[in-house]
Length: 307
Image (tube, rainbow, N blue to C red):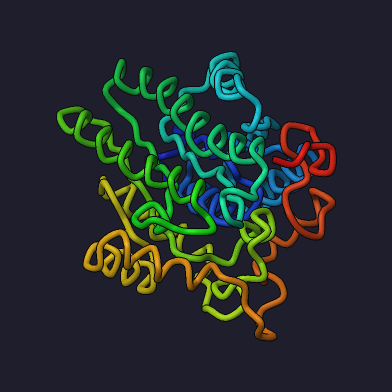
């Protein structure tokens, strides 16, 4: 087992999207530093598997809580659960998020609404609920997992990128509102990362996925965790993401959107076929799908009427 940071031994971090990708790696960062954890994800079996794995590796308390943030009201239920357990959440990590690839006119309307519910409404709700408590005790940290997509218009991922633009703006505003308090708001902007995101978004046939280097979720999580602990308001993870954000600022919306579209267009090259991040591959297996996200609020994709 890892040695605990004794300064954190009575502190709790609540992490959404904790069973794969960046959320899973963030859970490891917190556990290694002595934080107790509340882990939130949809799939109860996968959540218990991750809980057992981390309990065996770190000497911290880990509490799983299966909840689907696509469902309105789930954020309140998560907050109520933490309160009922008598747990003070010292750090909130809003990691859960998804996208959907394709021209906006062809994507399913309900799927677009679901993405707004998950990426914005659930994030706002959890932030509001736990931030009230942090303000009352004048202590706390929040890590919002955004994306480099939030810094540029992104054709073929238009709704996703717009939700991440909201996260970026919202987080910057909150950081300013909390500047005179002992509370920090940090937004993490990863680039394209080796996670299950591409499959859930039906984006695995694109130039980015098939041809470009994907960042390691462990490195992205470490960047976000360290920035959070330093009290920074924003961190862009990875040299490629930093370049994309810089070029977007330099070129302006029209040219930046053209560049982003090229990366999101289909690729005819024989490139990457699957992710390599082990926990994210297990996530794919756990939701019983070879592509796409088939479990939105308990409703299978083939049951949803096309737009």
